[in-house]
Length: 555
Image (tube, rainbow, N blue to C red; front, side):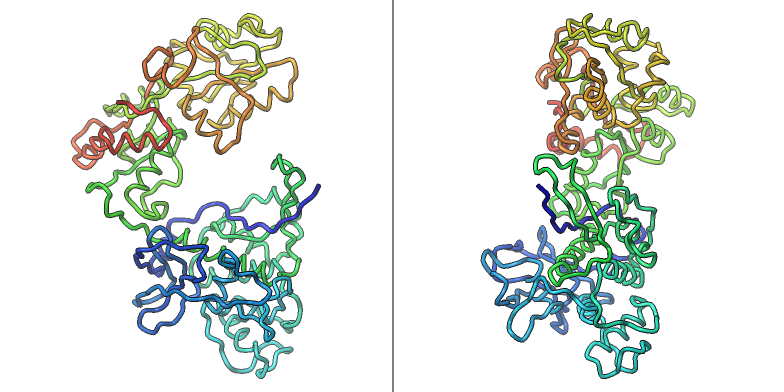
């Protein structure tokens, strides 16, 4: 059964330089109450001096309200009852998108008191709505479009938006034509560009949208610009199987006319995106009274860094020093050695990293902060449950075992997957399995996984696609479980090592043979700021961070 739904999508990341520019004009005020989504009221930011409503505003969220207000003005928050439309139910607080935008004056109803959600917007109506949304003052005078008269009710809106570059000059404006999705997207992109909020314009990957080529040339920059800067676009999703999202289909339908409700939904999500992207980082009053050093680490420990910042800053993702991703194990070690960062959260270093530190004359200090363990996994349909260290050496070094029956499994071919040499997982292989040897070249050539998550999905996919064969791979225990909240459940199971099950208890008590640690690693040098933070990570604060990040806490 096919089911089509309107979806709002946000993707990619906003560049730091753009975000800083925007945050200078996004004012905020602390609020003692949280937004009650079931209330009959809407919270709207107003300019404190004049009481004028600021349409591009939101709150309170997590104790703060935000509003786009260029200049030195201050904001305050008011509760406003949204317009009650006769065709919109107000049960449970009504429709959030419509309530929010009608309270801001962006959308108005009709003389009969209706909102008419499914009514298609004309280009003239879109000009008015868009101008109200961005608080653009209508401009009187003759229009540069031949089919608009200065007496037309929408002329001032079109004039003002044309002057801003939102509308490109053409002979006709076609005010009574339906406004399309791609026109709304391009208008938004041009407005953000004019206001200085579009700087990053990467080539976005549109492979999930089979109809992207249907987007008109004039609007492709809009789709690319919004999505690569973490703003929303409208698309339809066709849900073929309620239980399997892998079969969902996504279509932009760029020439589809925009209804009043779709526009309200898009613009309200735009406000949320705008705030998320640009709200300044605000130091939390209860945060420890020290500064965060420059952090980096492995893929698996990124949640540690995120959770540290979340305890120090509201809107921590917009703090200038907050890393949008970790540089991975090997690269973060090199950055620490090269003095580009101050502290990294990582498993053990590889032999190459140890040699690199020695060459640079840098001594590293390893501070254990969490339990971790190297684990091996295979298909949950594989009868084999145990493997020995010696057998793993025969598999990965000698490539001498190619059937699971040697591990009391099925008479099925064994296919080994490995990680690249500069990964943290490979460093664990060096520590526990390789003993100075290298992974067999045949394995590296055929089945090297270059991402920490991909070895899980590649082993899982291989097992599904090759009946009669079972693959084996390796990773880290806590990462294995934490990442499945993102990837979804995998048809894999962990293998016992030398008859010891990889459990949290066995890892903590040291009976599991491949138990290791995550470390906070710093350079062994005099640096009071880094030393103070290292001490913090060894105390109750650090233990709580490790716990909420999903790792084993060292008592």
